[in-house]
Image (tube, rainbow, N blue to C red):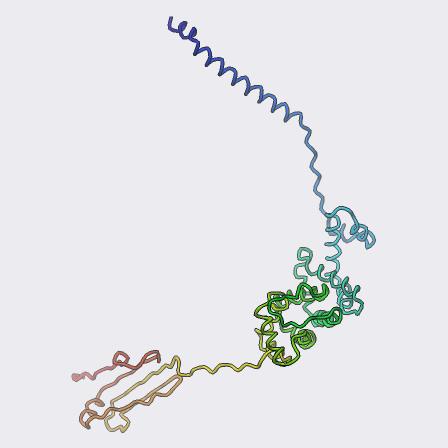
Length: 338
């Protein structure tokens, strides 16, 4: 009777219908999702293909020129890397580019600088691409190109501390400075100074009409401007040869090294031996590392001096960081029983 009464209860009927409806909805959804997944046509992924070194070497120049004009960006990028890789490994190609950046023809110089910059920027193709420019010929060609850029555009006087004119300079000049900055950051400024970068280009910038004005504007440029030129100049001022060349170019004042105070860190070792009472100096021995110490003998009677000298040894240790005191004296008294 209890089961029948429970089945006749409307609340139990409604709960059972709700559970059945929810289960039916989930079953239908699961079936539809499974059918959808099975009916979906997935695109076939492209097969990855790599260009071997033999295939790359087999590409001819006219083929590479065609690939460089391709509408697909990935194909153009791959062709550019192949060309750059061949350039950095071909000394004749590098020599031609270095020769091209020293031509008076502005367009030819620009094309060669652009190609050279792209070749040394391709670190994936060549482990150390900057090494091809770290030669006397490379530095000489870059500085010669900078010299030619002096006549390409008119430069304004560099006397405004609030105006940075670097980004308005000619593109060829900036490309040369980019390469120079990379070279000195990796290899230092020695070869750049030997190639007379300061005399041939930096000193010819419009720093001013008088020597005082040139030094003031140059110092102001280093302090206020944050560009590739100021970065290169900052590296030049950190070397002795660079400072010497800058002084000669009337861009820096010759600075004197400050004299070190020799009174600092004086280390004094004073050894006193009182074993010989007939010694007029009392057996005083003194050693100093950087200065001499003259002891001052206090007025004492002959008997007191004789007692102090007899069978007594003492040593005074002081490193110069504080005045000598009682705590610096190490003494050994004579044993009367010995």
